[in-house]
Length: 102
Image (cartoon, rainbow, N blue to C red; front, side):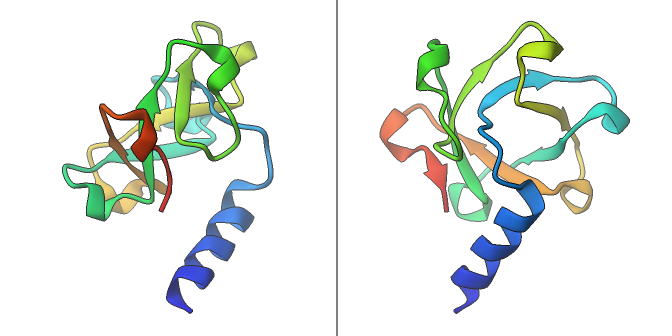
């Protein structure tokens, strides 16, 4: 029941956008998502694998493609040092098979 509530909350919070093409912004006010990177997989809402191919970036797959241009991005993200500021906690993985929402 708890996981269902968390999933429903995340879907409402993040919307149903086709997002995984990501642009890193230096300004919190410009960001769609405020991200905190966790040290442990168990603390994360999403496990992220950084892909080299734009075609692999799919909605909530955890496969992120970094864009050079803000206009190409589905999500503009700002990385924070504070867990309490974040609306999404992520863990970067080395393994593509681990990527996705938790």
